[in-house]
Length: 110
Image (cartoon, rainbow, N blue to C red; front, side, top):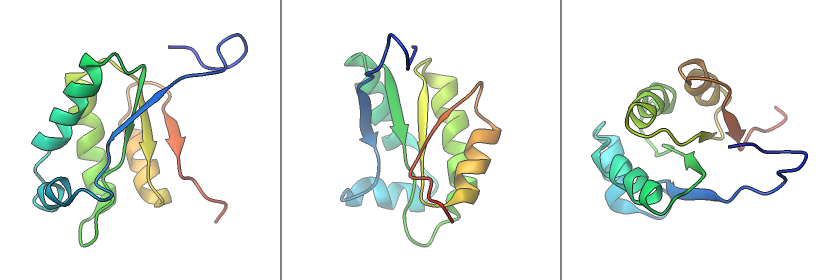
């Protein structure tokens, strides 16, 4: 997947995100990535060229969960990831285990 220059548009699969999804949020709080991986499988089946990965739920160590999720998703799917978090530490840890150069989403200027 190429982005930029002659390839300015890439649709992003946004399903691996707990926002507004109680069942996925509860699963992530327990450290269970099975629902997240089911969402990834559905996006892979739908031919998503890039998948957004967000594990931000209250009361979890988002950085460690992001690291675990990035590895799990990459080991299962060959689709590029966009690592999505408001936490710069979670973005950094997720990027540190990414196999290549990840896209980062929600990075702020702080």
